[in-house]
Each structure stands twice: as C-alpha cells, then as structure tokens.
Image (cartoon, rainbow, N blue to C red; front, side):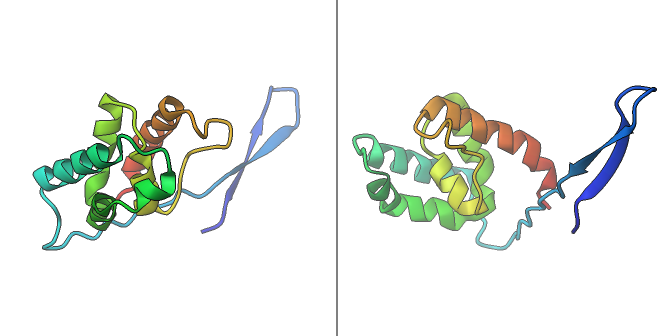
Length: 132
C-alpha cells in the first residue's frame, strides 16, 4: 500500500502544504484451536516476571522458557501483556515486540522502564483497531 499525500492549506492566504500519511499497518490475528485461555497467559506472564526479577541481562531474560511460551501465544497474549504493563511497569514489552515484530521504543527512552511501558500502552491503544 502506498502513502497518501494530502494537500491542506495552512491558512486561507497561503499555498497548500503537502503532508505524507504513512499507511496503517494491519495486524492479522489467526484464531485457532490452540488459542490460550486467560489463565494460561496470566500464568506465563507471572512465571516470566518471577523468573526474571533478579536478572539484569536482557539476553538471560529472553532465554527463560516462559518467554517462549508467551511469544508462542502470539497476538492472543497481547491484551493481557499490555493490561499487566498498565498496572505495573515491566519489561514485558520484550515479549510484545517479539510477537508483533516491531517496537515503539525509541533510543531516547530505551532503558527507562516507565517510559517504555508508556510507549507500549500508547502503541496498543492506537494499534488495537488494526487487529483483524
């Protein structure tokens, strides 16, 4: 899909300014028989948080088995991940990034867990309409 150019006048007496609107990314959610229930997702989230609470290495956090379980749950786990992050800032965005294949984290906020959590919550609020 191509970007859309829209010409809008800045004022009634000026030339129109052209802005480029980037195409929306659509997230395709495939539902199947293996879709996890909420309890399974909650359990995987809590296991990952418990197992990584004393870790400082992101690589070690990504190697914990419950991380792979969360990622395997895919888009079905995103609402619970975001909900948990909304209640308590955490690095669960690592799992969200792996699931989505993208991340709203910029270099400016990298390392600030509260700011990164806020970026993921904001991303989800904007992107959830694009889940089909």
